[in-house]
Image (cartoon, rainbow, N blue to C red):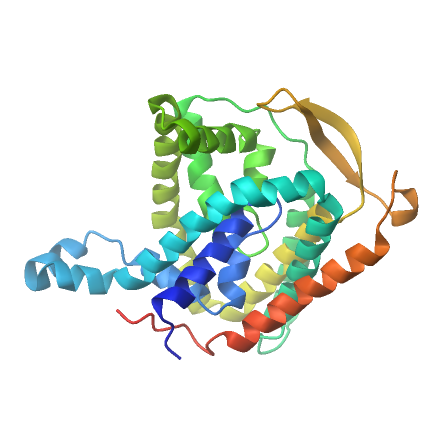
Length: 315
């Protein structure tokens, strides 16, 4: 099945919106929409060998080699999705947290089930990979966030780490930024740049983007190799990452400590998952149940519309 530019851009938009939510991975969206391994191949194509391709085939050859049409549509969609996420989903998290968290809880749970069903079978290696990945992802969700800094060298490193996490379904790049204390720093500068286009914000955003490019170039090659040689084990590990990350998306939490955001407002900093009966407020069980089902339904819809194999984007 060939996807047109609009279909690819919609998938990119969904990935961009997912990446803004701490605890949700754009890689999850890429996987369940059938473009994950295709995306890795496209990223891996950026290699010094492109110089030889340019000499032999010119710009057209390079464009084909890097899957240019696919990446252009996907990245354009992601840019739109990130902007929507920063201004839209951030508002939903602030004003309707239980609804949005339960929606993503259902989406990630359904995605974990979907990925596990793509496996050829389970051996002790797959079971061990699932358990270890689940424990690692769970530990990440309960680790205490650090204090961020605007030092450009650290912004660069954070870009490399965040984009590498984005490529892993179940591990959220934005949540790792939160743990490193850089989520509000990066989001604040992106918002500031979109609103004022000042060079101060542009510098931080640019350095972060360079870090993302470096991380993409290296980590995509590692993942491609793993999928080629240990495909079944890779799927088990990805399933474990998703299962372990569900704690971060649990809709009922109590606030352990707060922080002051860039607007001078006090917002949650450390939170703990609790049962609905221990939640200090209206648990909104009906709303949560409906949103979880919507998350499940979205995965089913995306699965039914996805190609069976890595897509051909139509170069």
